[in-house]
Length: 425
Image (cartoon, rainbow, N blue to C red):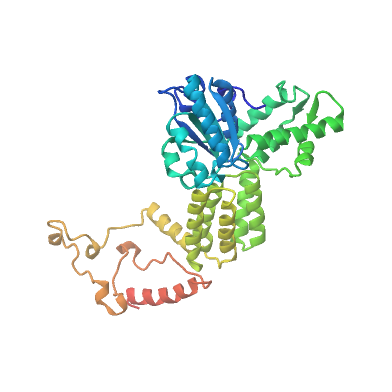
């Protein structure tokens, strides 16, 4: 099912637009105005080798393929010598596809430089590692780095359906029911090669067990072939809301094992980890609050880390945050406090800002009495002065009522002393 031309390629539309380097390499030749060498960087199964093979079919250039796993400096120099001779004798450029270039040593990569610089070869190199760290600078500066993106679920779904019907694939021997198709797409995780392997295994099971032509690939066939149970989870339906609800309530209820179970269900079903991280941040303030103020720091750090490193490693970060929150002492006092304050504001219970707290810096402010009588807190013992801060209609109102759990116990003790000073008690 490997594509034979660029129009067959699934995904990577950002690299295949008219006039793009890959289009010019395949369709426009490789003369003096031809394309530069390219480094294809992306995760497995996104089409790096496929694009190289499309280049080999589409261009009139000589095509040579090397793997960094097996090739050495001698092999590279042999290709360079042959490419130089082809260019000198026949004016023919060689396209060299080098798979897993990050496995080449500096000396091996340096051996590529003369051919690339003199345009004896157009290098198409593939790597799963960041080229900035795995490719030598002189070679990198002579190449375009093209980043391949993981295939979307729609991309993988279309690819699987095409493979089931295409003569080069299963040629209509099977059809997939919707549940089986969803499972294969989910297990693939954006990897086209994994999707096709999963389809082949599931189709083999269906054909063997039913004896029908065409055979129907069911969810049971897909689960048996892949040895991965399907997660009953609809990211846009009831399961999405039910599982995240159970997750948050498990964290709130301090059941760390249940919280980790629901986290695993969401991750295995392909839930957006950024959505999970946002809910963890909310829970840190709503359910843990001042009983453990460091919980919010952990939650925010986890959300940022997930953005930075992505999946699958992001699952470790999320698990740490979940364990912290679930095992932390709990308080919703801050959550209740802002609710009470908002109720008063929305009900019109606000009043004017006391004059001694108003801004006294603009012209004429002091003549209006602004700032008069204000007591600078740092001039008072303990840095706290007897003074009214709330508007008159709300004087003496209490919004925040700390619990005696965790770190909030100390906050409650200190707050009692603060309010006694502030209110002249």
